[in-house]
Length: 288
Length: 289
Image (cartoon, rainbow over all chains, first blue to last red; front, side, top):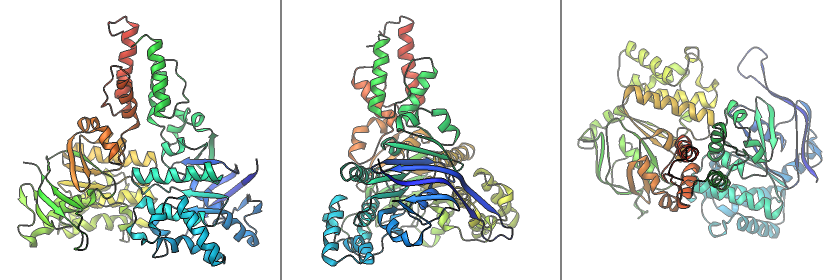
């Protein structure tokens, strides 16, 4: 497998503004993380754990103060490689209203391509493809303010897709959406990963979203404390709770029953899994 | 007679839109309740709650606060703004004063209270949301996101409203920040015995904190009832684009497969108890098996 993002011994701290003393607030030190091509990684962590800071390193919005961050083979501190990095790693942020610049959906999706100097015919083709991919073709002539939050986020994602990046980094893209909007966005990025091999890094507070990824990275206090498949990460119920995170209710129920003395595996994250395991133990105990 | 009552309340935005944002809503919310308001985006929940403190004027129909018709004397609408406190989504963007103290004091000051009264209310409100005295002189903009939000909520609490309405108070917070804010509000409700309305997309939170739930769908009040009754309608809620807690869908399925588990279970604790009862009963050779 090919590495797309590689952080080695990375260090970063924010310097405190409006203050006389030279106070530095370290976010992380000696952080190591690699993301392989085609990966679908969730990054979990409480507010202030450093997840957004980390994400901003992935397309060189922030640069490491120690160690290196290598993205699509280029050191992010190499200014000549900035365009290369940004055209291969796109970012989607939390608030859709802050990301949409044009007054017509399709023009918004074309914005980055125009800036990159892509020929008009190709822009047309790429914009149509991208809107098709996120399921927004029917609304391409709408004004963005007529769209729902989930639809706006999909337009923002289309704008990134149109650049044909290898990787999309999403920083809490569903935080402001209702359940339906969240589902739309999750379905869109899952399809991008599954059918088009786009690498996805998803920063989220929602455990159910993380549970749907292939890999979960948990950050706390600037360190990566867990990094594994979702089932194995969520089986660390106590550790996750101790850093202010929660686990899916299915996992919590199994964990509580296990505590009460029943022999159950902790790697349960979905309702279906949980039902199966519960029926298993109920049958074993002879409850019909 | 409830504290908030609506009579055929309807509202539509602008003449160009034929579709109503809320359409003929009749509800009666009792004093002292802790009510969750759910519904997907565009169902009318924000439009509805903005009528409760007079930010929106009914297109037709009436809103009663403590039995008084709110718009009987439009000039007096301001008093309802103090009776019914509304915390918007992302309230931290509305902070504007130089210090945390001044920001929390803004509401009480506008109420024309004495200096002493303002001070005691500011400190009391800050205490409820867990903002310490050391932050009082700080600029609200130096605080963390979660702290800012708590200061914004304190600003509404300081007006000591009879009804507190919170529109998605935990959006964008991590699980710990979310629990902290909701625990504080639950405690405040417990102590003050006033009415709290919580607009939320999180069924888990509504199930955990609220006693009653108002479900808005397509501009109408679909149902208003106890949490248990509402989650019994899980299939209909799912059809509306809402979700039910994961634990509820697990228990519904177990019930369907013939196990003696209540399908309207909505907390992990309750599910655990029922399962342990089932499993334990077997161990002791009970007749359930």
